[in-house]
Structures are given as structure tokens and as C-alpha cells.
Length: 495
Ligand code: BG6
Image (cartoon, rainbow, N blue to C red; front, side, top):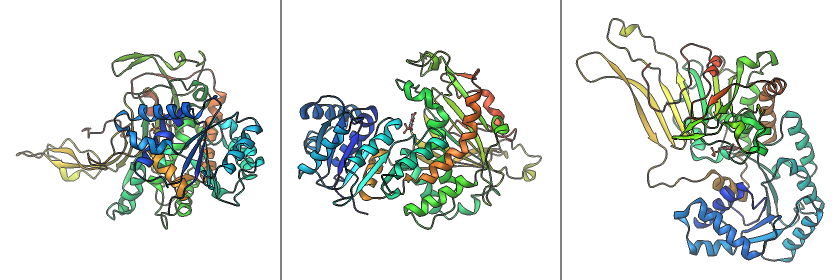
């Protein structure tokens, strides 16, 4: 698929996402000569800025993100693509003026991508106004709309939003972004699984004991209380990013890498997840909130002391969940998912634990260390694939130790690519394989809805964990067996 020039129109261009991700990603694409020549970037913001002020802001955004990478020549080329449109996105005038600007200047390519980096509560209104101003008319070029998560607040609101969007757009025009799918290592999960024949025979309930997917962050919620306190960790990370990771680990080989084939297989996984009845929620899900503690040697506040968080908030900053996939491949294998803010370390890892081998062969020997095999897929900050095995220790005695076969995903001289670079380019190519189809979002909500509903009623208490820890001890109760426990270390530990 070839990237086509377009007018990249960014709603919320002065906001945090644009500042830290979108503008730096577009700049890096330009630096790598990946942006089609005539592409223009039209920023929409409420502030009364002129072109010069916008260019100075854009420069700052890029310099802040990667100070060492800034190149004046590239920025001169990039800045020639930038425009600023001032307007209030809740007023029709903003859209009529936008339509005039785009149609009057030959400079703007006729294909238009609208990136909605705005509050989800504005999605519906903005689309309605774009449609009223005839900006979705595809007579002279395509129209694509990129929607940031969260898509809805629960199943009902997601369905209502979808019904509203359907009035203005077809599914082919909608790009629901989950930036996890753009991460290099996440895409590598598919290559690892489907390009290596030795794994396939083992990748099922006969050999795998359980799967863990962990995303931990050492940072707190910063200045995002307005959003986060209403969302919580379950909506913010589990319903979206971690369930997507689960689908990639668990899905059947798709017919091709083409968007619909991939998405069909992901949906089949989500549909096969055993529903959690309301009365079983506590056996399947755990929530907690960070209290004050120490992170990286520094004393930090608890969640309820953070700026703009109500003192009686019981929003979860840690959520863990156990799921079963009731299909032939996975029946009986628990998938444990967890995420938390202000944890000991920031890392995202998929850890696959194989069954214990039979041990009678070693009876009567000094062998003590006999760990199961693990496959670790490190997503960030380190990108790696690691297979842990047991080997004999050198020496006269029959002793064993764990070792690992390591495959780094990137070599030292290979630069990491931010997920947004990949995804923003895919929009220009019309490649939707790494964007979510509505049924994926819908089934993901179906899975977590019973948990959210139960938590919404139980409002008087939430367990806490000290900032800087690996989360609450009590979350252990999710495990099916005594031998299972959260895997946080990336090096093998003899148990
Ligand atoms: C976002 C969440 O979608 O993902 C944030 O809203 C979270 O709360 C972030 O911090 C994590 O993304 P990444 O790419 O930093 O792992």
C-alpha cells in the first residue's frame, strides 16, 4: 500500500497528545522521507495564535521530545507543511471556516484525515459538525477519521457512540487507534508466533500452564486527574491495550496480514472469552489504589493526594484480571492481566509459563532448581524475546540452573520507532490492520462490563498499595494454583 498525500487535520493540536506524540511522530516521518511530498498538517486549536506562534510552538514540541534529534534543515521543510486554524470546535463557524480554508487554498491535498485528539465527550458533536459543513464528502478525495481511546465508557455508551458515528461515516473511514498495536515488539509477537515453526506445536493448553500480561508504570497520574479519576486502570489500560495483547498471543493464524483477516481472528478470541458472572467478579478481578511511598528513591504522594483528585476517590490505579478462553487451543489455561501506576518499575511484558516437566528422572539427585520453561516477550522499555531453559551446572555434581536464549529485537544501532509514527503513516496508506474494528471494541467492553458494574456499586472501600511496590499482595488470590505467582523479574529465579 502506498502512502498518499493528504491534509492531516488535527483537532486538539495544542493538547498533550499532540505535543508529546503526534507532532514529533509527523516530524520524524518527514525526517525519514516517509511523508508524501504534498502532505499538509492543519492544526486546530482554540488559542488565538498566528502562524508564527504556531511554528514556534511546533518547534518546541519537537525539540522537547528528542532534543538531540532536532535538525534545522528538516524542520524548515516540515514547517512549510504546517498551518494553524483557530476556532472553537463546539461552534459551527469553526467548520464553515475550515471548509473555506481547505477549498480555497490549492496547497491542501483533497484527501483529508481528521485526527480527533479531543475529549471523547466531543467525538459525536465534532463529527456531526464536520458532516454538516460537508467536510465528509468524498467526491474529490478520501476522508478518514482517527479516534483516540476511550471509545465509550462502557458497552452501552460505546454502542451509542457507534450508532451516532454511523450516521456520518462508513466503517472503512474510521480508524480507532490503540497505540499498543503500533509498538514494534507487539507486531513482532505475530512474527514470532507465525514465522517460527518450532513454537506452534507447543502453543496451546497441552504445554502452557498460564499466561501473564503485565503493564506497570512507575509514574503516577500527573495532571490527568480529570480524565483518570473517571476512567480508572480497568478502562484506561485493561479494556483496551492489554486485551489487544491477549488477542495477539492467543489468536489462530490469520489467513493473511490483511486488515479484515487479522481483525476476524482477534474478534474470535474475544468472543471465546468466558463471560464473568457478576457473582464471580471477586474471583476474577482485583483493584487497588496507590498510597504514598517511595519511587526511585523519592518520596511520592498517594493517589488521593494528587492534584484535582477528590479525597474520597476510590478509583483504581491498579487492576488485575483472570480470564479463560474457551476454545480448543486454550480451554483451562488462565490468562492473568495486570496493570498499575506508581509501581516498582515501568515495564510491559508478556510472560508465558509452560507446564512443569515430570521429575522422576532426577529423583535421588542433588537437582533442586527445576523451573518451568518461560517465554518472555519484552515490549518496553527493553524489546526482547527470551526463552528460559534448565541446564546442568558445570562441575562434577548433578546440579541445574536456569539460563535463557535471548533474542534482542533491536540491535544497538537500530533506532526505536514510536508507535504513532507507524500508525499515522498507515492512515495515509489506508491500512487499517492495526486499528480496531467496532466489534473488537464491543466485545472488549462485554468482557469488562460486569467487573465495572460491580465495582461501581461497591464504593466504600478500596485496597491500597505503597507507591513503588509491585502492587497489593492480596491480588494473589486470582491465581488458580499455589505454584503460580506474578512474574515481575526479567531474569530467571530458581524456585
Ligand atoms: C495510555 C493511557 O493509553 O497508555 C495511559 O491512557 C498510559 O494512562 C499509556 O500511561 C501507556 O502507554 P505507553 O505507550 O507509555 O506504554
